[in-house]
Image (cartoon, rainbow, N blue to C red):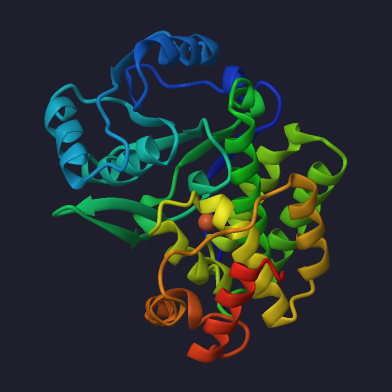
Length: 314
Ligand SMILES: [Fe+2]
């Protein structure tokens, strides 16, 4: 048997944000200041709601507990995570604790987090990646409206992440026919959008990518990327080289078109400050990404990949 879990209801496309009906007395959870959230909330057309906008970036379980203790007695009808990953992660964890349903509305795209059972929170100062069925959204609302005003560089990094997740997800040993269908279609849409200048299609492609890889995993490209993340390189940017090299190593069917899409977006060569052998040791500990890689990976393979990335030999 194979299983794929996705939100019960997915509203997407033009004006999904405004046309979705939101229950009365919802609790909106966000990280952004009122200048921005007021604009978003007006666009949602939601009238009767409560707002919590004190979520910090890279939130911890303390942020979750703050929401619960402040709003448990106010009995919200539903929790709405409105924002980037931080707002959604807090709602993913808090809503089931409060026995409430959750609506996730990503204002950034790329990770596909609104589609997945993943939740990233800090516990005792350490970031943890959790995965539980209860973190899945009851409803997701995906609208390209939020892309207006997003800096070009952020959009580029985000679409790169979505492409990497779709293609690594397709190759994952944890995948099945349905995840591969979703991942393949996600990449087709993203590739077409990149090559033919249709950025308004990025959020939809990214959503499909989340539905696909969220039900299997990413692989070698993401494993390689974390040593660059540790040196402060943005996630999407690091994947522009890491996933390209990983696809070459894995002989992925996506290698040529992935590389072509990255060339079109235009990314600089990556630098790695750490010693390659030491960095490779760190990568080798990432069993969560390496075990589902389509072919077995040795430390020598990782060293070669990292050297290729450093040399710009993609
Ligand atoms: Fe990613």
